[in-house]
Length: 120
Image (cartoon, rainbow, N blue to C red; front, side):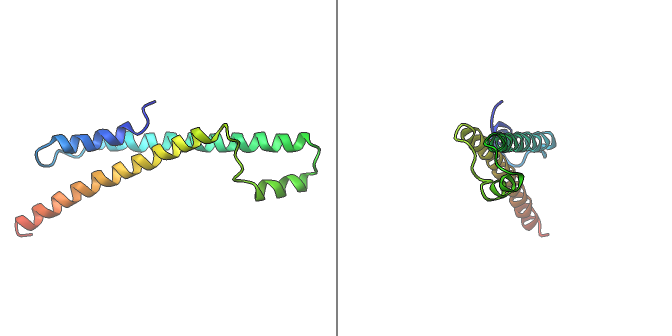
């Protein structure tokens, strides 16, 4: 998987054009889909880490109420082995969001400038 490539392609299309290319709906949808895939993967990783943690607590023989209290208080304790992938997916989500915002802001600025030039 190419992380953050869809958003980058949108911005490169803007850079290559002389003025303002047609709206790239397919590229925007693909970027949103990539964000959704990364979000799903991130959610799956967090849930798997929580399951592993709860299984370890269950094997230790603690009571159910203690497990629930530990789950609430230590929900951010994710094993070190899972953290790099969590950081990668989070960074990809953030990058694609920034690219989408930059793409739309650039288009909006160009259209606003055109409107002022034509006396709108």
